[in-house]
Length: 486
Ligand code: GLN
Image (cartoon, rainbow, N blue to C red; front, side):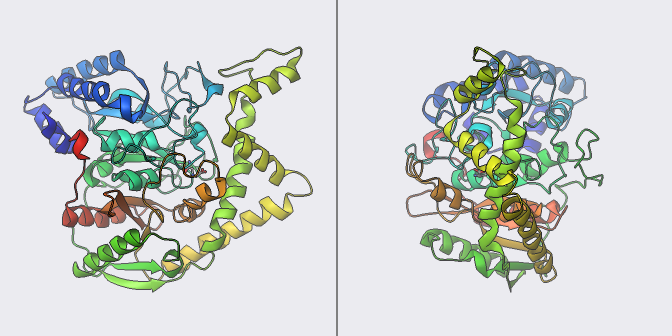
């Protein structure tokens, strides 16, 4: 049975079609694994067993009738920030405890139309604010490669569950690296699509001008398959791009001869772990051996990206999170009047990091400081975007590390928010510029912890970064699941 973990979605669909296995069996297999292993990994906030079995049953019927969708019968884990009708959607926050979503996010609707199975809700940093999943109000998820380490964040539950084989695939969200960084630290594939490529309707907003939803999977093919389902224009999201969606699987396996891969000098700095540096360099040589040419590029405003991001994302967060006031959603703590009720609810409902962001965001937007902070940050954001535009005149894609380090120890950075923020230094510029990027496993450090390569593309050029990622995957043939769970 454990061999099932090695199959991609296309191969699993063939097994369904040939009646070699049913979705009920596959779903049962995953539910069993969750029960066996998630006690120690803590990736799921909630397992929706009855719902999963219902959906699997329906999928088997559709398969029998020859009406299978592209994800028919495939068990998924969902980051607990995507509204799913009639299900509790908490964002790993106490303030949304008991909030039952009245509708499906567009991505959930799309997964539904194509027949997915909902295994459960995956853990995350509260409201997606964090890089280690330690900011969850409920539990700290462990890295399946080493249980005393963090899985990355904020989609740490998604990455950990995927690599440990507790779902076939999962959805995460990425505002400043929250898909790519945990994917890198857990040794799975994670893609942040172009801003506007995937509808944000029904995604609980953190920083609306940066947020994107994307897949986390054990292989590149699955990433492309899931992208085919979730991408596309949606009139319910005003930032959705009305652009046709190509078949993302089509470029997989094509050679990369003549492709120019840009290497930004600002991304190979002191502070990168030696093993990470070496693994990235070796992977670049491999790409060269396969016919790509490596070109040196410069992204001169990179050093301002983290500061810019933490002004823009906190500003947007302070505004987005104003709606949790005890009136409309989840938690309410009574007070002697409405103001006291607001205060008590927000005091009890939000965790420390979320409060820090709200306070910072309120400050940078306040009159007298707006020009110095928010406006300035918006201007620098434009410069960062232009850096990429210039760079893409010289190359087709850009390759960088995803994270300067491999997975750190649980508790190592919780007392030092600045250190935590700096771990996103290579992923944040991509969000500020709205570009697509993928994290693909490219090696392990001496401790056996995974290392990820980031491939950044031009707007709407997801197919090409998938093509490069696929080549890395095929050439490297790295171990995909930690021995303990294989
Ligand atoms: N770690 C970053 C932050 O804390 C990014 C989070 C994200 O992408 N959701 O904001």
